[in-house]
Image 1 (cartoon, rainbow, N blue to C red):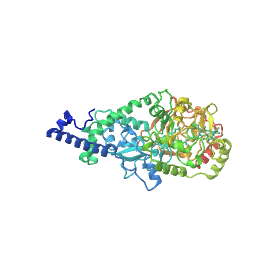
Image 2: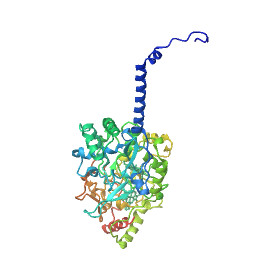
Image 3: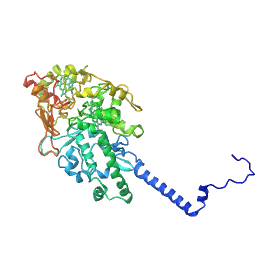
Image 4: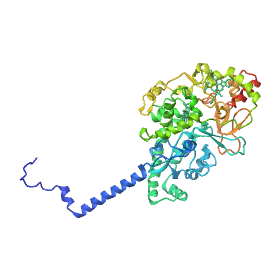
Length: 490
Ligand code: HEC
Ligand code: HEC
């Protein structure tokens, strides 16, 4: 290196020579300005996070609030403006009439998206699922009645997998293109020039991302179709989040209720009793929905938890025969309370499968490798060191049991009356997805007029067996009826 201050200056390099040509300088400056504008546009339209929506009541927060910024298609959420267009353009792919309602999604008047989705803006407004999607259910007491939405009830009317498959099918259809989708969007929501450009990029981008997702979820097609009120949440965790190989197990389960959590504090949760730390169990469910710890919204989650701790199931909507229920209470105390009453020693503990005899598939999905991998998650606050492997299913509290049909962890028994029959006498096939309450047997009927096609549940398929849990099956019919009368009061 030349350090002599008297030596002549180094002759200018090629870049410097070019810089002194005006045309080149202008071009360079223009491209810098263009890149800066493109950067600002991209940030504004694809990355800028608006604050999460805040709702006045905890009920609205549960239905429409976000737990953080989402992951769907890794595009931060399903673009809001595409939402009304898909069921219109791809009506031929819907399982029935009624748009999104054909999957059991519930849209309240005045809302542009269903319960169970939060509107989150990361660049563009998108929809991200929340807990109410699978944990709120509808019920009718007469065929001509408007379905009533019960927060915290299992979403027995929802066909979540069919909903996903519909989106997968749309994105692989040749009609998923700018020339088909954009004019339909503009008919509903006039777009600015910038938004139009964004959707021109989003439409093919999403097609690609959803295609990737479809391939990642291809394992689902190799399992019996879950139908309404059920999904395989934990294989999704195992394969798609934790990256473990598909081991062919079936983890399909019924949605449990999500209410009265204060009374469940310390009890083992999840159908197999895999965790008993309420805080961790809630976070475990948040993980698949948001992008990562940095996208998580702790205050929103705390508000949700506080709401769920006190949320109570509604009362049975038909008259209850008090004298008969009192008789039923005695039978319950004798045959059921040990495992099912709050405060009883065995409630919230696990009954070994060898004693219980219900379907083994869900339990087999919980492998030592899966549990070890869950225990190893270390992205605070997402840490689950106490999650465990068990050898049976949990003695679940029965609060609001009238709203929890079909029964058992795999939803294989349609009514309480059927659960009190020996397994051979329980229905081998039945329809799921209906929300008309049968006040006698206590379960749901798929009545005409329901927007959703009933799903044919077949107990002969793997994971769907309706065996076991033979408590009370030997009781005389009158006692079973009294017992059901009491169960209506829980
Ligand atoms: C895609 C549907 C889906 C969504 C969305 C969902 N869950 Fe669940 N949830 C399930 C299923 C299925 C189970 C039953 C699986 C099991 O018990 O292992 C379950 C079980 C649970 C349980 C155990 C309940 C008990 O009594 O054993 C809790 C707690 C829970 N979910 C909380 C949440 C929270 C909190 C959210 C939102 C952050 C949420 N879930 C979102 C499907 C869902
Ligand atoms: C030894 C403990 C035990 C006894 C006694 C017992 N149960 Fe259960 N019960 C369980 C277990 C475990 C499950 C979950 C089994 C499964 O899902 O595979 C269950 C599930 C249920 C469910 C389904 C809950 C849901 O949300 O789907 C109902 C209803 C029920 N029991 C009613 C009764 C009644 C009524 C009696 C008395 C006649 C009774 N049980 C006696 C252990 C017991």
